[in-house]
Length: 411
Image 1 (cartoon, rainbow, N blue to C red):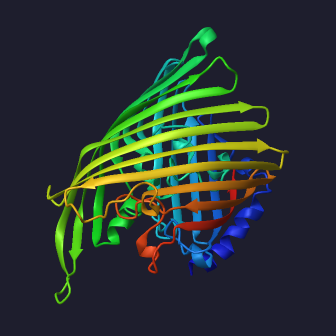
Image 2: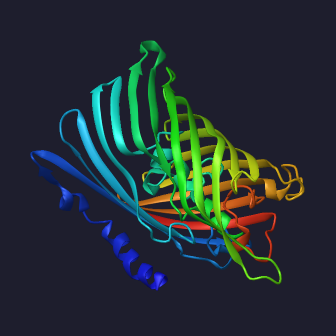
């Protein structure tokens, strides 16, 4: 049924991209213009062996769809409000459970000071607050090392408030700052709940307080941007766990986990000149989590970085490439449960070489052809990395080649 629905609806969306849709949604409210935008994308993924991102990529799949719509209005010269709804179905991720991506009231007192509150997109690194809008990116998938598709919710938004502003430094360029605090509430159809479900876990809630900030410097060198972000969190999860032992009926026990320490650092840079865009980011995530009422403690250290380049060949064609590197290590309080291994082991890393061609068919419609050449499959037990043992019953192979074809529509 899902494939039939997509086969019927999506060609209509792609074909309608050639129409002047903005005119249909131009209207004013109280003399103020209302802006309505939407986007949708459909992908096809095929891998030579391992299944990726919970999709059946080893046999080819169209199960890679997302849609979003947002509306905003400038109520006064300083006050703007808006909201966005988002939905996706990537294999077992999303499963057509809609989310409120953001719903914000933003008041700008001065250029150097503003506040916004509600469900706020988290400013973190170069792409975090725009990662869901496929039309803004050269690549069909952002680097998994820094922007993991299966962990989209983890830093995407917070329910709280920001203070932000831009500070000119005259000959030294300009600084933009954001500081925030709020509640993080992860969806229950993301990579972490899916990882736990493979061994009997069932989360009914996951989230907690999150505070942090972002500082970015537009340097005097034209086109060069440098920045750093930090987030600290107090995350808790509740649910149940099904235990099964040979010769006995399965039984269910309560499950609880909470943070002892949880933080993320990110450093980034971007340089644009002419038709070139160069970017690189580094992220380190430290997670010290206690589970089963403090019976078991797991400390996870996840580090990732990427370097990317893209070049606009013409109005209709852009080429890009990136190298992404992700490694994980962990320590737990049950020695011997997980065998020791170094980062050269395929279950401790994921290295990804990527090449992309983006075709802008018109101002609203793009098509991306992308190849991934992956080494390793990451921490399938300790922390999600895109590969899951539940989707690879025959065992994971150390190397994976993946073809992605993704088309997107926006207005």
